[in-house]
Structure formats: C-alpha cells, structure tokens
Image (tube, rainbow, N blue to C red; front, side):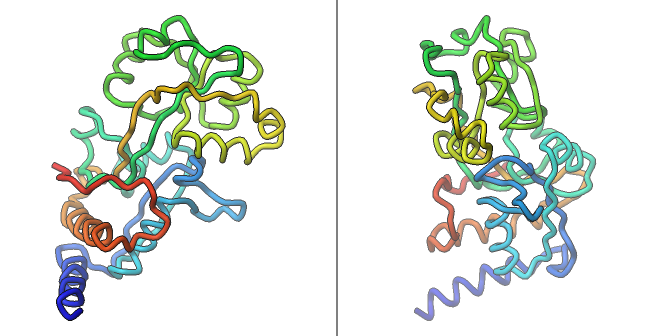
Length: 258
C-alpha cells in the first residue's frame, strides 16, 4: 500500500514540476458538437469524455485549465495560432510539423453512414468514388483519406454540424456521411434532434469503418508546452495503469508521442 502511495505521489510531483506553474492558466480548445466525445451541453458548458478527462487531470495535478469549445474549424485555428491547446486532435504529417502531441487519449472509429436501401460494398476508398460524401469542415480523417480528398478522388461536401450532415443525407443531398465514434456516436446524434430521431431506422452504418482515428491533446510548437505535455502523459499513464480515469471506455495504450 505504501509503495502505491509513494508511486502516486511521485506522479503528482512530476505534474507540478517544470517551467509552467501549476497555477498558471492553460487554455484548451475543442469541438462544441462531437457527442459523446466532446460537446457543449444545453447550458453551454463543456461536456463529454474529453472534457471530463481534462477536469480529472486538473483535479489530480493542480493545473488550472480553461476549456473553450467552438465549431471545430475555429477551435483548430485558435490552437494553430498559439492561443491555447486543442483536444481531440488527429495526428497527420502536416499537423506534426505544427503541433507537439500528447500520448493518444481516445480511439475514435469513423463510420460511413448511408440511408437504408442505399448501402453499397465498401472495402477500399475506391468504393467511394462517384459518391458525394458529407464531412466535417476542418477535420482530418487520416493521411490516406485526406490525400484522396485533396487529389479529388473523393467528392466531399463540408459542413460544421453533424446533425445537418445527417439531415442532408436523409433528404438525398449527399450519398453518405462520415460520422465519428461508431454506433454510439450515431445514436447520440439521432437522439439530439427530433427529425433525426423520428427517422432513426433510415440510417445504416456500413460494416467496415473508414478508419480508427486516435485523438490527442496538442499545442502549437510556438507555445513551448513540451513540459506540460510530459506531465500530462505521466499522469495519463499512471491513471490508465490504475484504471482511475472516470468514464473512459475507448482508451488506447499510452505510446510515445514523438
């Protein structure tokens, strides 16, 4: 028991160490509409799995963290400008030149959603050719998918709202939609809107996911937040080891973030 207490105290000391004072405010941006992973609730407060993770880290470490949620594109560009960190960040070669990353914090399955009776075989990206796909503005779906979109191999229509994307799908304006967090993510979106809920049976998830997308906490390299990320990673590894992270069911094993 004493050994466990000593180990936990060592982690907390590490969290307080470094160039950034534990009392100094750290702003972290995120998506305001990505249920159940991260979103703004009816009162405008940050909610979901990732904000809960940040609040638990703040409680354990004493770090002063302010969470600000916006539409993803605004959240991303705020972080890119060095106005704060960003949580829920995918890792791509382009972004790795801009951001310092934490260890992975959430394993997010991106699904292809279609309307009942309009399903099609999907095994490779080539199977999406000739179809109009609804996507999140400013989002990354992994290097392979991003490259296919940039090269024009996939036809996409970007938007800021997951619910509006599903409504476009329902009304035949797009052929498929990329939606995160698998079945759970789809059901949360359907529950959040009366029209979508009334047409719940019309939405079908294709069997093969588009990608399994690891999500991270990141800071622009210009912010020099490596010491903070090291403390966060140490806390995350210990919390995972002790299974003390509340409400986290899709946590990948901590790996090197370099």
